[in-house]
Image 1 (tube, rainbow, N blue to C red):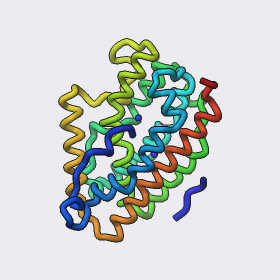
Image 2: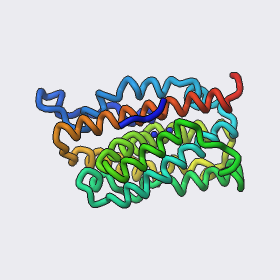
Image 3: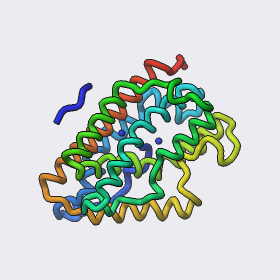
Length: 237
């Protein structure tokens, strides 16, 4: 799939928005309802299924992390550049930044040379190109990618941390920095702060539709990435 004019597991569910009271749906409610099906499909991909069952080997897992870091390496500087945008500033939390933790995990799990050891998949190339386009011409749509990535990291990522640690026999605090946001209480508080920030966003109807469409595209690119990782590096199981 080419793009025209990116642990997501549980975190995008369970949020009640204004749409359920008969009023115009909030952005957060629209995002939740309009991406639910794609979210479920992403969870049920073959690649994620192996990871969730605790059967993932290090090389394909590192390949996933390497592709995710390419996404965050473009998304996070773009979010910083547009931090004053009213449709992005309520979602701006320095504690969410994942590029550094991903680098630390790859250094632990693979060692030096991981950048050359694992290729960027075509879906990641498309994803990065899309983020760069938004950075240049439609930065408000970066809110969709912030929603898809960070809310998933704060929620389903916490389950993945336990699975990865156990399946790869990792010592505490090593190799799972991607999923760590402080104590359990701090993680819950950060997730709540992000949700509250999302509620503060009040885009017009056209922008709401555009953000929701962008979130759907993000899920589609994630699914394509998982398919490519499964076909290219995942051994039969």
